Image 1 (cartoon, rainbow, N blue to C red):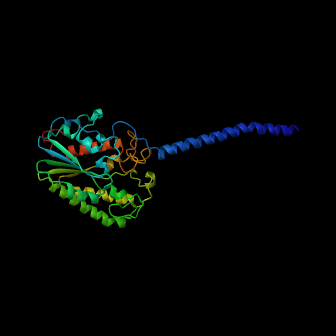
Image 2 (cartoon, rainbow, N blue to C red; image 1 turned 30 degrees about the vertical axis):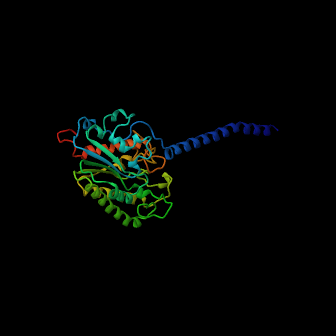
Image 3 (cartoon, one colour; image 1 turned 180 degrees about the vertical axis):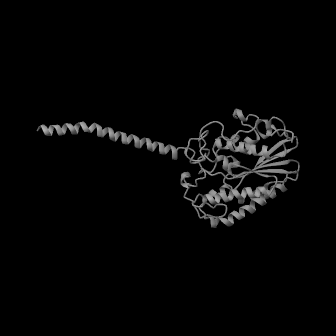
Length: 325
């Protein structure tokens, strides 16, 4: 009887230890799960300015008094889908500061340095490069009395449409193999040449064309499921070839310049929280994409306008040679 009592006592005394052990296991598993969710699925957008600094010195004096027309051409990035308000779209912010502009960008816009400026935006959300070529040919009228600055984004929708929901085709090649995409990439090269040539013809007094290359919402990893799309084994390679074409064709024209959106957005896509990646941005580990994945959010648009402004300052011939850049 005493032995039975002793066994029951040992059993009873062991229960709290087992319970504590199970609680610890549950706590570790819970913390681990929360950490995994944070690192792999949490995508905070952050607040405040985003993207590179823009040198204020370049905007302290008027660049030119000659008439200048700024034109937007392209897809939803140039149209501004995903910005908190129209005034926060990158195209509009390049032209004029919004009322709630960040302190570091007050007075840094084209209207501050171009005294005779007008502008039009022909960009359409959802449009692909095939449409952009037709729009330039059919809708962009000749500007006989002004120098041109053209801001473009073209080609991103060619890659992401139709999100794997239909067989890949030209200008909607999601899911294509590298072999399938080769003739479409070659055609994109020819379309870009035609677009740049047509734009140039529309500005007999001269123009400068600034085209953004194509960013990657997967931060260069290529795991499409991380952005809630079907797996695309050749996606990264096709994306890289499209960007190579943009740079190749731009280099054929002395007045066409590439705004480096791809490089700027690395570390701000689906892996923005993963500190072990080479693309991690410890100063701003936040997500710059809108809910639809393919467009920027408000902070992403801030970064884009800064990249375009920096590229303009670096490349434009409108700034007098004796004015510091």
